[in-house]
Length: 201
Length: 164
Image 1 (cartoon, rainbow over the protein chains, first blue to last red):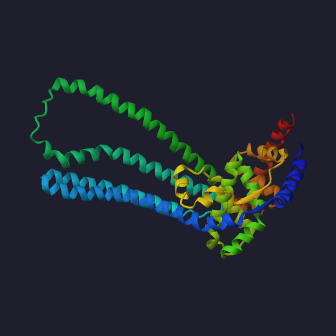
Image 2 (tube, chains in turn cyan, purple):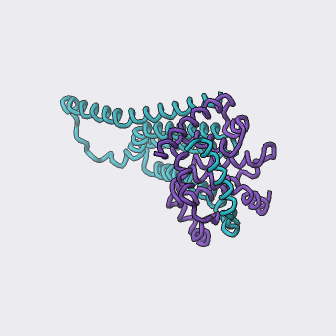
Image 3 (cartoon, helix red, strand yellow):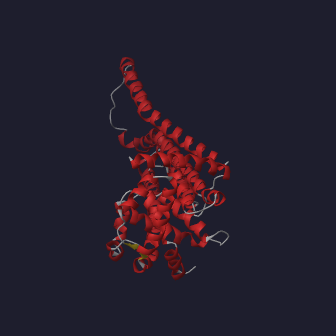
């Protein structure tokens, strides 16, 4: 088939679609009211759920520590509040970016915005993963008084030497399986963004 | 724009939505789902339409953006929709007769292009000028010219393959 035939068939399709299609007014009327509002509602519920969980945890920690804790526990709570605050800030930033997307903007600009959102989301996820050991430390500080009576086994220098290769192996496996994959995803996102920028020039 | 004006607008431009859904989805279920999605996005964008461009330009922009960023509805959203079973039962926003086989072939050949190129050829086939396409897509006019040339070549190869 030649391109001119293709164009003719396309025009035939355009004509045919007009004749053989009609809108389902009843369903559309209901959908415009019902579905649009519920989608927005779901989006709000989801972000509210995340924020409330963090908030509930902070409240729990603030009540728990004065009963059981000492100076270290307060330090743990402060670290947790800072971390959760940072995560909530990331969540709010993402919601703001997503709500700024308006589909009546030019196609390439929207694609660039969405790629950028994916990049911010990836960055937030990576940082929250990287911060997870600190949050674990904060939790341990917070509850350490509960375990003050427990006799922990003493670790000798030889034990420590044996633990170093295990720790190194653990860190290297995380780097290779997690770090390289993420770097590849970042490279792909940046490449996509650069291509879109070229289209706009 | 009130609901009735909007429905009239959709009725007048239903062809655009049907063709975009054909080019950007692979099966009947996704197609009908995508049409609803495009209509919903158009409805949400009505307040931002200021009348400074042609209605068809605005419809193409919103519909193409929805189609390119469309993801199949997941179970979570389906669950929420169950609160209104009538919509859930008859979710097709358009009533359509079944397409003859040549229509499927037509869509299939365009489907082999990448997402941006699909949008470009669709606009070209619907008679938009390079300047209008550049406005809808947010690309420079010179870029459109170069791309169109490449797309036509690519499409010719696809059509020759299909002919064999």
